[in-house]
Length: 268
Image (tube, helix red, strand yellow):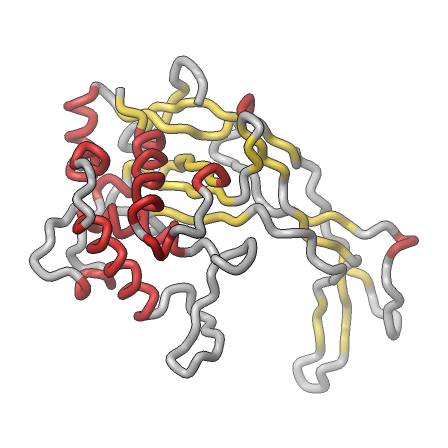
């Protein structure tokens, strides 16, 4: 069976080596894994998750009166932390997830990025998505690249027109560098064709599937909580009670089907 996440990981390394604008990306700090997402259903094709950010400063959730703005209640103080993910001695800073089989069956038709590709084959949408997720990695610090408006001010949108145009330019640059067609050839096939050609599609997941490592909340001990102005009712929040450290032993291979997944022999 074809290991789809291994193919994407290999392709990402080739893209990073060939596209100067992505040279800041350290492939050893990336981990590609899969989540289930049905073809034709709503939802993202892929997502870049940053888990390399340092803990936040202490803060709290709060509620205020709509008319007066006065604080009516707040949560306990907490900090947000990143889980520790280490694979064969490599510290992972970014997880990039792909929704299978949905990612395999995407095309350019009707997508916002379609206007940046003239008479291009539909499978190029998948290469665009891969470059798109790599481009989310901020070259200046650990985190997700911020999007700016045309006037240079920060934008609340995660994908502006300039972002999509930049990604399309990098896709063209990669293709024009004449990479080995075998590096990206698997993108030419939809999910059903991949199953027919290879006898099935497997991918790396976490053993806790469908969950995966994410940033989590840790309550600040009472002795370390900053002073707070007027006393207001405290709204309880739950600290994360799950695991915060992961290694290669927490990875496994799963077979992805049209509407389900199942465990596959072996790991990784």
